[in-house]
Image 1 (cartoon, rainbow, N blue to C red):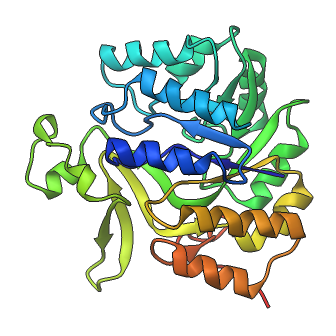
Image 2 (cartoon, rainbow, N blue to C red):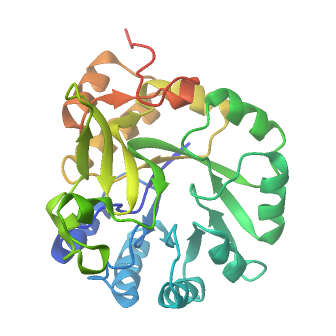
Length: 298
């Protein structure tokens, strides 16, 4: 099983993004996903910038994949998506069916986690269109994945979201703009003030969700570190680590060490807990509420 680095889901300053990927070039990840997935207003980096970063990562030996928006609402966004699909150099992660249509039959692609791929028939169709890999929707359990993988099209890889705040939903409304008392069309890109999302608490002051522009995320940070033996046994090909604003080099190292040693430990889990944003959870993987944490490592 290999490690992948998912696309940055937050709005970070331009130089922070470049610095992040300069460091990531030396991390023990095999695949790196690049690009804006959440909001088209976050355009400090143009496609040429992403391609420059992609070239540098490819030169460092990484497989590079360009990710597309998960929610397309305007012709300008379709135009940008088509440019990504037609880049001619790097594989594309299609995060909605318009992107699938743009790459179908032309180049191999990754069926992203935001497609509704929940059964064999859907995966068979995506495979016929050119998908060489699919990323499991984050709300599915290990039991469900086991059934799906039993009928997976031959040669199709499986990737699982293994670390990070879970991307749960998208909306045409910008939650951060609303929280700041701003209209969506004049949001002033206030997402940049929340480098890991805006925490939403329940009435008893417990973390419930995290708002990331038009995206709703979990308040907890999903971690399948303790579940690595099961993931490996099931034959999962890639485990996705979703970037957070600090400690990512150490987080990648913890997962890489666990994979190399073929085991997990309480010390490694405790170290990860100190680095993660919010409490750790793995409920969905175990068929429980997503915010739950199931199992302890001795």
